[in-house]
Image (tube, rainbow, N blue to C red; front, side):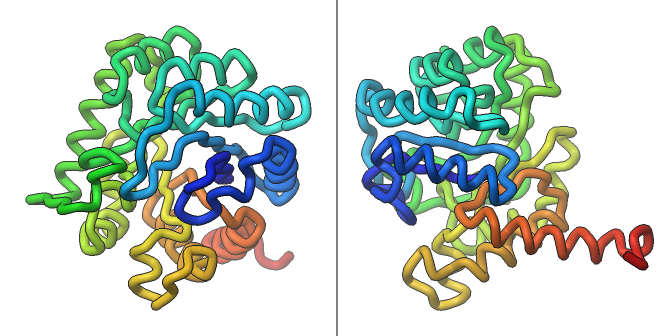
Length: 266
């Protein structure tokens, strides 16, 4: 899942793809690099970020989605917690909703996803982007995230979504401290008990910088790839990344080594 931030303030690439034409070109490039999905977002969810209006969010994402309609051959995901943004994005061509609030941000989101048949990514977050990193605290982060996601799956199904349309995301970096992120990734296999595909977004995040000493997000590519491969080895089937080409190549090597007994010699 390639990340496409159409924002001026996202933590890693804010402003780079704010103009619609630049965003369209990046989406097409990610498709060429091997992305399976492009995830477009018009509101930053970095720690400390403020909400923008629904009108502003729509003005950022809809021109890009409209221009990609008929050109992008892979699915387009809308990264939003607003039902009105999701609805208009789906009308314009998006087929997946990636909601960092797992449908808790707006009550209309779960019924909307169900009525449109859209895929829905349900993510765990403690607090809101504005406050989530002020003092995150858990008794047992793995158990709490697992039970939260179990409940959100049940809520989405109760709203009318097919279970097969749902994906879960532990929300690495969203209301978690360094140790919480590490524990979640180490115990990612626990989420397989929920019976849904697991999406993981570790790309360029601060816990990688804490390990590698890289303060600049764009300098965290090696750590991002290492964490993506580790997540895949623990059961993640969707990797949300900024560096599509490099991650795709790394995954290809890892996968070949994992199944070497079936493929050697080439």
